[in-house]
Image 1: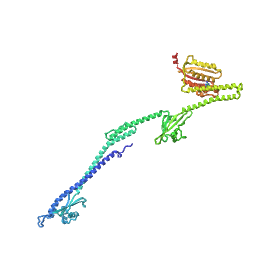
Image 2: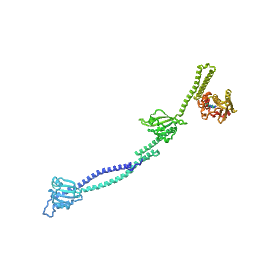
Image 3: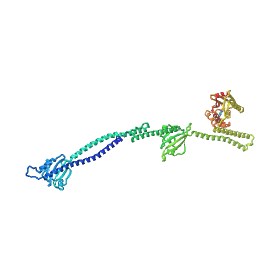
Image 4: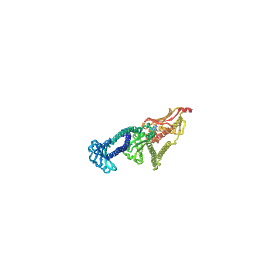
Length: 610
Ligand code: ADP
């Protein structure tokens, strides 16, 4: 924010207000005072002159009524007496005094320069008026020759109630105005000095108000930048002091609120970054304003580059949706970003951020990774398809053989037993398949438990190999490479029997005539590894990991012929893993296969037993 210039500042306004107030006060007092003073001065001036004129009138009346002997040269003439009286009367206030008799004849003048007027007739109306009415009269007028103001007074001279003449007087009332001018001058300079002092005081006084205000302004600026440590100085307990105190209080509250908001923001951002779902928020135009780490990871984008870009293009939905259509989308949208070999399927849910008025503020998109779920669903569908297929094949075979029997083949001594044999084999295969499926489903269920017992593995294993050796139908040589000491392991005997049955029967199944099947046990750190090797057809390298999947068979036609269900190794894998071991296979195509599995084995524990 810019600094406030001096001419727009409250500082100058205060000074102007002070000066104007003082100016108006002085002017009001001045006008009233000057008018009163002028009136008083003028009244005094007039009263003084009138008093003296009254006295003069008294003397003149005496002179006018005095008997004069014209021949007596010792007595002065009337004119001479009047002149003497008038000359004595002369003062600074008076310009001229004249005496006029009742015939309007001028009897004398105090002005030596105007003596030529004596004996002439007075023509002033003001004189005629007094002569006619016997009433004194006065007026102010401008002297045309000098331009000064003069005051004219006409007073009657009476003897025994009869008017015998008048005194005409011109007073220098201009003196009073001069005096007033002087006083006004003093007043004006006094006003100027008072205003200068007021202005200086105003500057100083207004500082006491503006300083705390400008302090608060600085503090507000600091607060806007996030600095809450400043405090406004409190200069007093007046309103401004209280304002400063309230301001400091407000700062504290704001700091607390800021800390809370910051905490909430941090909480929200850690929730957003630690949650597994992806979250993307946009503004009302569909531009990304927030994207959390999981969302950026799922979409394989960097947070910085996608901010402000369009959500529709970010989710690659331009062909199907506009931003407005997304706002209306109630259902979740499945987004398939799979590219070989990385499957990625996301489910997007959209929710609109709306004000109470219905105004759309933005859109929140929640992305959920459903790749795993989709994979499970797919596997389930595949499994059901596989089971149906596996059951349909023997059933179809049986139906055709039974149809043939029903159509008359049963009478044929040679064919009938063969046909019945086939249906029997197929039935057994179906039973095996169903048993295997039941076994797997039991292991999939949560309450699947092993009944473990400590047994010596070597005699247990020998018994199983013996069983195969006695019942084998083909010419296969058995080779045992077993340790001669006991190996005690905690296992479920039935389950491990099944594992070994499945692996050994495979080895025999795929062994050629005269082939060798080797049985080996290795004692490794924390494990024993049981391996069964044959010299059969072998398994191509790329299929090695898949043979443990349900229903997987390398050569479908051949294995079916050999009576396999494709579930044997899958069951073995589940069981070995339930025992805490692992199962794997090594093979060289055409040369043979080795299927191995490990079981946890602790030699020290065994020593304790002994
Ligand atoms: P099956 O009942 O069909 O034998 P398995 O799950 O036991 O099912 O085996 C899966 C597939 O692995 C078999 O179909 C076969 O193709 C292959 N296989 C298993 N053991 C051997 C082996 N010893 N030699 C060659 N191929 C084998």
